[in-house]
Amino acid sequence: MRAAPPEGRNLTVAGDLPAVRALVAEFFTDRGWTVHERGPGRLEVETGSLRRTVLLGAFAGSRFHLTAALELREVPGAVEVHHRWGSGAGRALGGAVGRARAARRHREVAAALERQLGAG
Image (cartoon, rainbow, N blue to C red):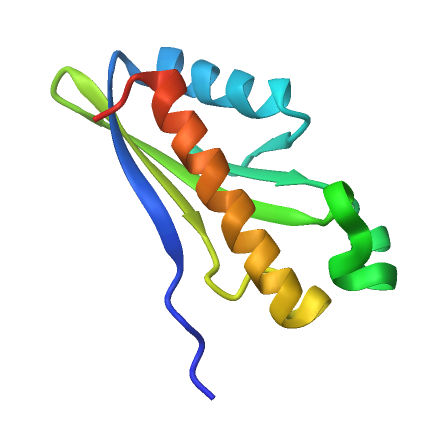
């Protein structure tokens, strides 16, 4: 069985890399996500409880464990924010219900990030 390609959203934000990185990190921390620096211009964000999700699967509710990768790249006068998550997110820990919950939550967060940054 072939893994499905990752889903995500690409945003272009006016500003410089340090300022946009700070805005992205603030966006996620304000919503209860943990932000991990994974190198220059690379962030990983996560929320929920892995332990609770392993034990309860899709029934972990609002504490369902999710992760996403963000890559920030400077372009002339702006920063490109590549927000990626696996299309199979939640499948291993919550089956079809978990996968649907994870995809819905990731799309909602991506839309809110786009609104927050005023991105195009």
